[in-house]
Length: 329
Picture 1 (cartoon, rainbow, N blue to C red):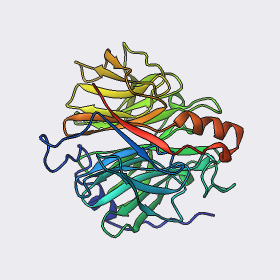
Picture 2 (cartoon, rainbow, N blue to C red; picture 1 turned 180 degrees about the vertical axis):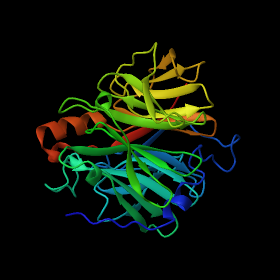
Picture 3 (cartoon, rainbow, N blue to C red; picture 1 turned 180 degrees about the horizontal axis):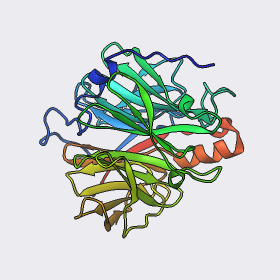
Picture 4 (cartoon, rainbow, N blue to C red; picture 1 turned 120 degrees about the horizontal axis):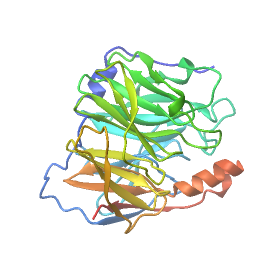
């Protein structure tokens, strides 16, 4: 049995300033290299954000149940951990807080039979104290099915939206920490062993856009129209993982098993969209990206190795230490 700590008002403070990127304090004149190589023992990071407060990228860890930082010169340091954090997946940072999706593919040093392929939580950490301040249980909202909390987005009212790759739902967590199911729809589901809903963003037009990995589709969820779900037309992606919105028309999506980043553009509020171009230089087993200093930076996370280990139920084969962050060019 899991226990959850829901603290009134915590998410409100945590999610302020998270709807946009958190630029370097010297942006746009700060110097960021095109590529950052770093070493982190068996980190297998999945999510990436940027903290102006720390002047560091923030990365999660699928295997170690911790969160770390990476400098622009490629220095990795542990930032925080907690017994509740099994596998950190998507992450956002702002206003002195870190929000992270907590899942379990059975390959973490903290994996347990009762959480493997059954965990969907939203965790909130204080960036200064490094302490867990809120733990929101999501998987209990839909019992009896597999779960994996993957990515999150935040709207201007400080609601947090979380995707679940193993269940056909998107969750909503209110500013007071109250969780609910925003949508439950078979179109969002995927066959056993495949990832369904993945990266998600909030659009200032009042809707969400989420990637479905198994079919290479984008779905639009209209928050101003009864959470109506429509497929974004005119576009078929090669898979699809993390997603970042720039302005109101451009999406940068990690595609093709993490070997490229696709720039996708819409001129009709994402009723339809089209591929502008793919950047294929410098990506391998990438997961997701972040907008900082007017550029898109994507995390090369060795995610294919994680999938293979999860399929084989053999976390011991995950021994890589070298990772990188690549700038879209």
